[in-house]
Image 1 (cartoon, helix red, strand yellow):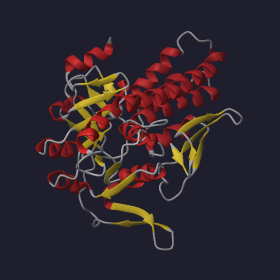
Image 2 (tube, one colour):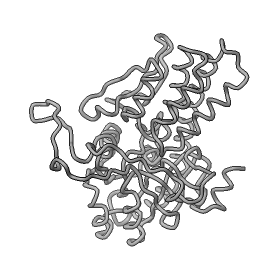
Image 3 (tube, one colour):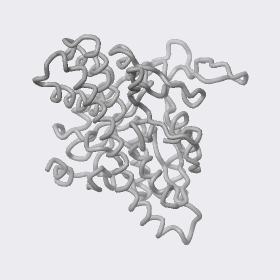
Image 4 (cartoon, one colour):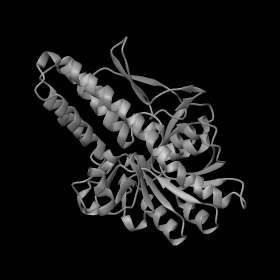
Amino acid sequence: MKVNGEHIQSIWYELETDEVCIIDQARLPYDFEILSLQSLTDACRAISAMEVRGAPLIGVTAAYGVYLSLREDSSSLDWAIKSLSETRPTAVNLRWSLQRMKESLEGIEPSALAGKSLETAQLLEKEDIAVCEAIGDNGLGILQALWTKKSESQKCLNILTHCNAGALATVDWGTALSVIYKANNAGIPLHVWVDETRPRNQGASLTCWELSQEGIANTLIVDNVGGHLMQSGQVDLCIVGSDRTTILGDVCNKIGTYLKALAASDNAIPFYVALPISSIDFTIEDGLRDIPIEERDSKEVSEITGPDSDGIMRTIRVASQGTAISNPGFDVTPAKLITAIITERGIHEATKASLKRLLQ
């Protein structure tokens, strides 16, 4: 991704200092700060506190967390995997990444475990970049075809996205935003409607920031505006990411995604999901029953933090003391509402028959 015109990743390993570096996403967009992860505790905190977030990035961070643990104690593999697996329950990439790490370390001598784990974590980092760029390449044709139809009647292609499925949710490129970045690079004029994505406001804080860094026109909207925009003909397509998708094509993503899919279906607007194959959980069929939905801290709803007019960060309450609060982090969009799923291995229908071919 671009930050002030310079390319940077969301996570990387610094060889000279033997540290893992991340962008602290909890401080964006007000401050751009790089954090150093030095231990398993640091990696677990980064995931739990959402200093890193997004299913693919969580997976890569967890892989580096294993390395940081083994660097200190070669007998800590099982403890590291257990600790990291408990940080966020919904994103399947976390489990997938830890399984990859465990398999790569089987039969390795204790003295070589740290080195091998670092090698595997760096491999997962590079794979994620390639996968996300391929997702963008595969989705580009969709936007090109749609722009061909729309170009004579409007000035740009209007896209609605929810939460943040950009480079900040991955190592680089992103999933849903990778398609948008590729279209922008191909010269398609774009405008993106960005849902604020309450309660943590990842759309407002992260997606608008990312798109603006890339010079892509975007407009922030509150979460309940999307249906109105679709009704009034101001949205040409929707594209989102996914934290876990079932073999039947049901998509678990940030809370509020389901409502956008319903509105898109009612207004005959294409609704695409862009995701790496690692986000598909081929072991489950019933998303509502089998995907654990993370219930997050009630303070995310009852309080809001931001800079005041003097630039001082303050937290204020927006609900009275004692108010009962429910804060599920994700919802499940049924496959029938999804136009297609864009992966690094092409575009697939949201059906068991189509997704099953990705296992071959």
